[in-house]
Length: 159
Image (cartoon, rainbow, N blue to C red):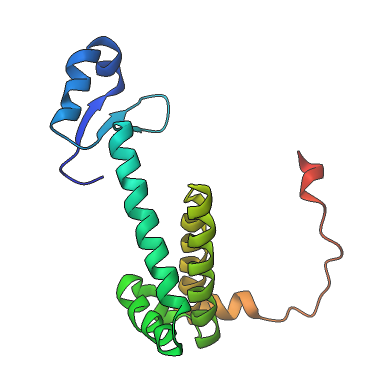
């Protein structure tokens, strides 16, 4: 959250709800610190809708740009390192795959109104770039061990 946002303890919302909620008049969001769980962000429904509208518009513009003439793909590939400097560590085929997957996932997520898949995609590709940035780690993870450890257990059986 930016410095423009107010922060209070969750107990203030419970004990002084009118005064605490009045702070939303001065700040777009209110960060609620909790002792027993993850912090929460409180905002108005109108502001949340505005935020979603902006994200949706940006997503649609990016997707439309990426689908246009062949030169637009090169433009997207040209600007991605400015937005995500870590892509410089991705091998060329992965860099292209990231660009395509990012646009496709953003479009799909926007259609659902849920950006969790975009966040996960960015985290996954960033970790891939981290591996490629470290020659020792890349070698350790890609080395052929010459062994077959057998079939992997079904993760659903572990629950």
